[in-house]
Image (tube, rainbow, N blue to C red):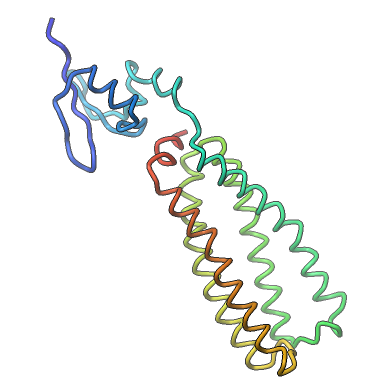
Length: 213
């Protein structure tokens, strides 16, 4: 009996035909992931490898959560939770001690808007962190959206804060300006580091192949 021949998609190209043993080898070496499309004689259309009854058990038995997915899932939950806890305290400082804050109404409005948006982003980060640990494909995709939006927001917030500092809206004395501007620049670097790393690792093959639910 002739061996069944298979085709598979790799880098947007059709590869094959190869025997079933070669397909099994490619699955074991993770060159073929659960979302890789395969086809053989008798199929009406291409199917994901994890949906083919012959190969599905291999993914169920060997699909381990990559370390990057575990680490970022936990970090998302931790950062999201801390953000939700800290946001109310920062808002309380604005309203409870306004005379000690020595800030203008424009700056106060800006801080409220930033805190509200940050609160929503922290809820999203916490939710997506849980989804990532559960290997949800939607969580990985939305984390990419979160990462790009956060990069955009950090840059915009840094520019606005710098303008407010230089215009005296924060009430800093002249000798405090340099420290305030240094803090704004430090916030830019620190604020960009995590979303950039998040995007890099969520776009890598291990995260793509593991988050398929």
